Image (tube, rainbow, N blue to C red):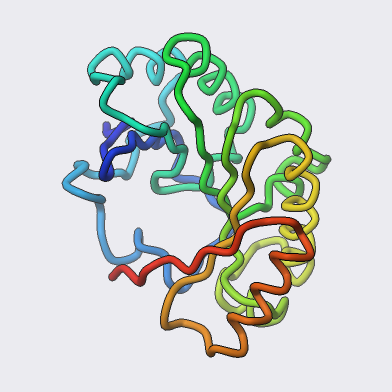
Length: 200
């Protein structure tokens, strides 16, 4: 199974294929791997000990960040992810980023933001669109129309516990006016706005 894989100068962690969304643009609908990673579809979810052991196979001095991403929503395994984050901090002292849909609170039924403190440095959240209706059309979240507001609430809350929060959209998928609306949302949240390049 591919648990860790390289993208540019960072090391990515693939711990789950579970996700509450079925995004219309999700890369896993059209490919099995990223950057020659090998298949990111897991035979089963690796244990925390298995994930920790994988790091010994890599020269950690090479990487700027360790990024929790992969072919699933990392916060589906929040307890395990945070345990691995603690291991990374204690063992390698690396910057840790999590790429998330921001629906952790809905997944777990509580405010999860405080748990990120001291373990995760950067939270990158897929904003996708300034409209809650359009957001649901794009993400097809199992949590329904409340997903957009829950995502923004999580972004505001987690800003208090991590150094950097980024909200992102994808280039060419929004109008210039929609991008301006997204930038305004980010300013209200206190997050950076990033327009990611389109990948197919």
